[in-house]
Image (tube, rainbow, N blue to C red; front, top):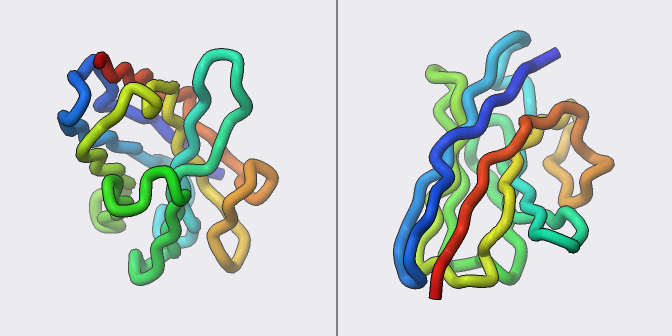
Length: 124
């Protein structure tokens, strides 16, 4: 199995940027498809972005397309989420997740392992 730890969250003004990192330990990182999800207070956890094992294929929720970029460096066992042009509605706890399935999914059930999350707050 794999252990995931997210870092990089914080408070930022609208229009600003943040980069989240997810450090993985345990089983070979490159064997997992990876994703980012977020959960705002009182709302369901929602899909943000996903990436295949090599980084060659990426997937985004419509709400973040063009503003967020998911990437990975397998040699560093690390997943990233670059977030630009942040909006107050991006405020949420952000979670990284690892999947053993062949294709990265967009639902929580497609992922087997989760980090504990990092808080992102965007002020208006």
